[in-house]
Each structure stands twice: as structure tokens, then as C-alpha cells.
Amino acid sequence: MTKRKTSKSKGGKKSKSNGRGSNSWKKNRPRKEFVKVEFTRHIPVLLQSVLEQLDLKKGQVFVDCNLGDGGHSEEIAKVLEGDITIAGFDLDQDAIARASANFEIAFKDLKNKPNIIFVNDNFRNLTKALNDKGIGQADAILYDLGLSSYELEESGRGFSFKKDEPLIMTFSNSRDMQVEGARGAIGGDESVDGGGSSASVQFTAEDIINDWDEENIKTIIESYGEDKFAYKIAKAIVKARAEERIKTTSRLAEIIKMAVPSFARFGKTHPATKTFQALRIAINDELSALNETLPQAIDKLNHDGRLVVISYHSLEDRIVKNMFKKFEEEGKGKILTKRPIVPTEDETDENPRARSAKLRVFKKSA
Image 1 (cartoon, helix red, strand yellow):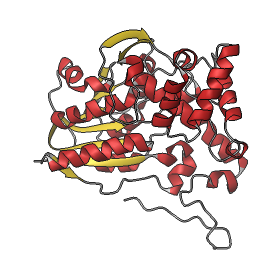
Image 2 (cartoon, helix red, strand yellow):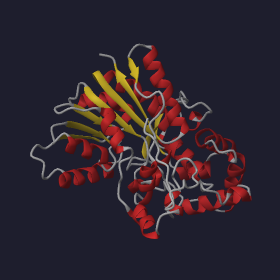
Image 3 (cartoon, helix red, strand yellow):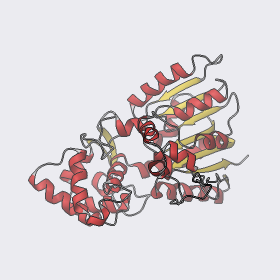
């Protein structure tokens, strides 16, 4: 497990800290470093730990299930001097275009060019998508389940409550999505899949906020956001939409802020954080997709292959932890991280969004 460093003041005494180091850049660093963090482009989370845990060798096959801007894949290709095959998944065609452009620049000086295979698909379809691309087995598979800086700041899809954008929140460019059981898919267990038939629907955050009943909205926020003020927030949303349809992130964030008790409005975490997380999870059916893809990943790994997952909230991490335990009990391999690897203080200072990341590793049996 990566050890945290303890920050010190100029006098050599330990400074007061919240134990994670995630807010030290606010208190102790000059303003110019804050600006640097805000406008830095994609920073791969837990990069050094990912490189070590994947344990890739030249000539092997690597699957990046959340390609994004391609940060992890880019570094892997450089370390292996281009002698690697990379299959990069992303449901967002814009992300694939960005990664392709980044690779073109990053790899121009490499003597050997990596074999890059782009897969514009949901990782819940891992087996079929890889088979369609002619990839039989892989030597390492990575899931980085977080949002990229681009998705939060520039996608225009409403992932961030800090921006004034339409309430969309889909990962796909197209708003036509396969939704399992639609409204019936919401429940208290992280593995709920609804059990309904698939239907192609125009399914966005605006739909949930304006068209779903109060009880379903409350259940989403409570189950997927784990927000103790879910009832108050749902009630405020229903009351506000009766006067005017809620169409933007800024309007929704304002409603949420006014719905929670005054002591919760000005804490370290914005009161809309958990609701936005819950909506994103529900719209993209993220937890069911994770439950479906991990067994496929194990089957796709070569012997001694490694499965590495970075999660960012307790619901995801619980699924990964329990699935790895199940794999081990079934004799499919061994858990290499009894406790998750987390970012160091230096990493969270450089990239505050990484502060909640947890990395777990499973090694398939020989």
C-alpha cells in the first residue's frame, strides 16, 4: 500500500491535516499553484501504481476499459517503447478522437509505434467487442471509473454542478441508450438491474428530474448518492418543477442547495455533489455495467494476467471488492491488494479530483 507523506511547516513541526492531504493545496500553497491545478489537462490517476500493478511486458496485449484522453495508455506505451497492443474502450466518440490526437503527438518520436485499437462501445460488452476486433486474450485490463477533466469541464453534458449546462449526463454522444427496465431498475442494492426488457429511449437527467415521481427521485439519490437529505432534495425538486421545467445544472444545484439544512450548505463538499453522482450512475446504468463486465474481464485475461480497477465512491468499490473475493473463492486467482492503494498527499495536491480514488488488483491463476 502506498504510504502517505506527512506535510510539515517551515519550522519542522507537523501541520494539522485532515489525514488525506486533499485540502492542503487550499491552505498552504500559493495562489498560482491553485490556478495550475484548475487548468491542468488530464492527469492520469495513480499513474505510478497503475504501471507497477499492471506489470506489462513488451509484446503483450493491454485493454484500457475507460480510455478517456488516453493518459494511462500513453504512459504504458512510452514505458514499453511502443512494443504493446492497446485496445481502448470508450462510449464517447469525442474521447476516442481526443485520445487519437494525443497519441499522434505523444508517439511521434517512438521508434516502434504501439498497435492501438479503438473500441467505441460500453465495457459491459467487453467479450463481444474484443472478439469483433480480433483480440482473443489480454495480459492486463484496467478500469479507471472516474470522470475525466474534459467530461467535467468541457463536454457540455451537465456532469458538473459548477457549470451552467443542459441536464444530459450521458457518456455516449447519442442520447439513444439501452436502458435495463428503465424506471423499474432503481433499488437499494448495488447490483440491481431491474429485470425489465431493453428499450432504446431518450434518457437524460432532465427526464428524471422533471418526469419521474418524487419517490423514485428520492430512491435514486438515496441509493446511488447515499445522501441523507434525499427526501428533502426530492421534495424540493418536485415543488420547483411544478412552477417551471428544470433544464440546467445551475438551476438544479441551486434547488438542492436551498433544500438542505443551512449547516450543510457551506461544508467542504457542495450539497449537490451526491445528487449529481446519483443521477449520472442511474442514467448510464453504471453499477450494473460494472457487475457485468468484471467476470468477462477475468475470462479474457491470460494466465498470470492482472485486472486493475480504480473506483471513486463506495458503491463501485464495494462491487469490486466483493467480485474479487468471489473470484478468489472460485479459484480463479488471487487478490493482490488486501487493502486498496490510495493516492499519496503529493498526488492529491497535484490532482485534487484523485483524492477519493481506490485501486484494487486481482491476478489470474497460472
